[in-house]
Length: 114
Length: 114
Image 1 (cartoon, each protein chain N blue to C red):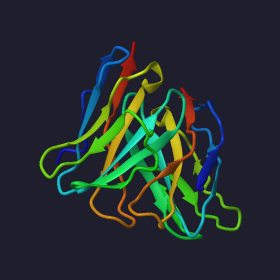
Image 2 (tube, each protein chain N blue to C red):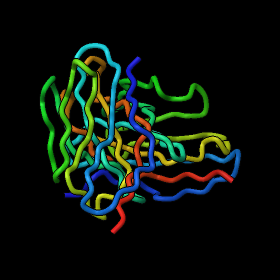
Image 3 (tube, each protein chain N blue to C red):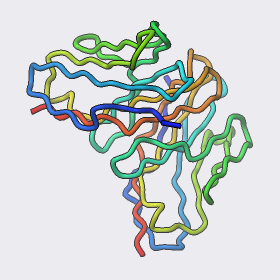
Image 4 (tube, rainbow over the protein chains, first blue to last red):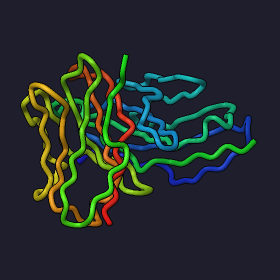
């Protein structure tokens, strides 16, 4: 079945540091890929997405490129802020089964210190 | 424009009682998904419903769990005879249609079984 693997946290950074969170996936067909962010006590918010190979999703300074050859969708941000402290989830939908059922990775907690 | 509304935010039940979790999708959305998040883990798909129909329940435990999305009113996730292992955050998400429309998540219901 489909699966998503992302690096375990927590990741602790200083403000203005560079952030990378690795994500790799296994899926049949041609999945769409997503990054969601969860702030404490809240639900998940869509951060960015990419629907086909070589697409780059970007939002709020975050970027991720859909790499079919390496089955990866790593999240990057050049200069993090304290407000970026959250849990980040990589996810996919296989575009085969009915609906938009998402398969999530285990999440990576990011803590940015001033 | 209200988002996905879940209630209650927190629910405490003793072992053996029933838990009812409600989800009102975003206005105009007719697709509802339920996910469960165990502590320090990612989200696991439970069930996907459209109005009056269960489309995919491959993630639902075989016993004690049921879900509905009636023609009128919110979607309900029902857990009978709760056990301590049911303690988790339960998230509802909705979308307007199939395909690549993104899921919008509610803030979740945190169930604690004592």
